[in-house]
Image (cartoon, rainbow, N blue to C red; front, side):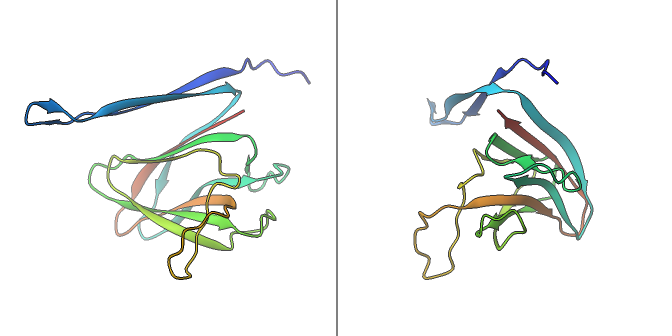
Length: 163
């Protein structure tokens, strides 16, 4: 079957604006991702006191039960906390063995209300170490992103662009 999707360019612009003592201190930075032909976008209601897997990455997308995104093709990931007052925790589930079976370790980030977490390609895109807080330069695959909520439900928006 021939595709009818015409690849497009994703443009991402980040703008910070703060005026201190009459001087603008913010900036605008933009970049593009060419040849985007797949977008995964959804708003997920994450129940209180729960772990919710919001996106999964694999080198093979044949496992329809997991509905994973092709890790080699993903070029941009954004997770946005849509809640006005509740923070949530984003857990980066890391596949150290890079074998598409399950995460071997994780790292977590607090995502404040109305804020976003952004990263590029998850293939060889993350690394963690608990040994003496050394700098990690040997990066491995991100297996999935899990959102943990405290005592209240939180909505998150997931946006992933792939080529």
